[in-house]
Length: 381
Image 1: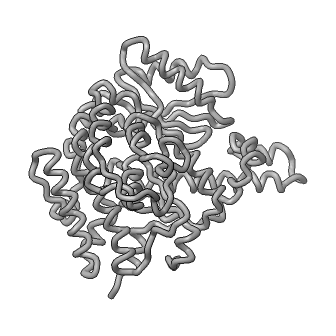
Image 2 (image 1 turned 90 degrees about the vertical axis):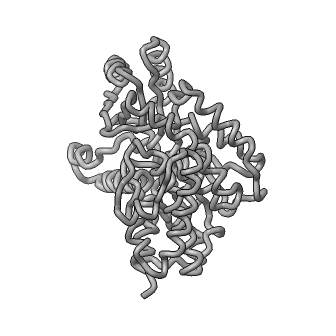
Image 3 (image 1 turned 90 degrees about the horizontal axis):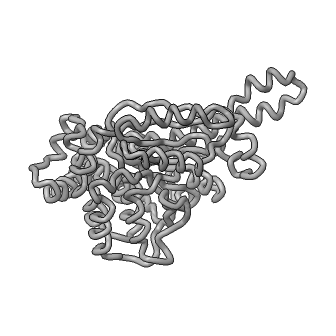
């Protein structure tokens, strides 16, 4: 197990996860540890109180976590509150029990809800103000999920033309039979899209007519609120969130650690208040790949994944590392037949990127720590 010392933190990135179909992870196990229980309960009670204020429904997150009862979409606000509470508690435990401060990390970022937690952890805005928009708008966002389908759009052979996909989504939306839009850029050859009604089926059909290598569209199971897309504009979610964000009180001028936003893919929240980035967070796609590249360009040695059962960010780094290993192995086999090399290098989309973005070659060397696992393995006796 990696030791999380101050020198290790100084060369680390903090990666906060977002909402998923399941959101408890190992939080029940952390709650059962005597040395952790008070901190876990404090954050769960805080989040439950904010959730109750937003929804008007009695909320007992300590009982829900103790019973290992995953909140479904009908309890979307409670799922959001659990993610916030679990991530804040994990950072608290690292500091209060293990004496490790995260403010000295090289960078921080978060996927979806995780960005709001990163903003709070960095000391920029109070956690209750970061939780307010997603909690108060949870019911409306969840109500749209039943009409939406999530799909993965990808190419096996080369990078996607992102602008062309955005334009195609806009043209399908303009037909007036529902909206469809990109919700995340996971890699140069993989996008997440969300669409209403039959728009995903139409997108699949239109992609087959595009010139160039085949573009595949594969539906994702489950119901997904359409955050990070223009679909939420139907119920005026961005404007209502903007009214809440403009009332947020900034606590510090400098985030510690510095934050890379998945809204822009760049370092943010320093030269201005960050309120415009937070407003765009509601209906702009998550630019995960840009931040993965930034992580590797910054020579980060360790990525610490914070939250219950992190999935999207670790999976993205793992796929990249595997592809880099395959590609560099193929390059080293100059004496092997071309057909053999082609069979081994299944990631040809990556080939043109490596000379231009040499930092990607570092991916296999980056170490990863899932913080909830680390906390359980290092729990005081």
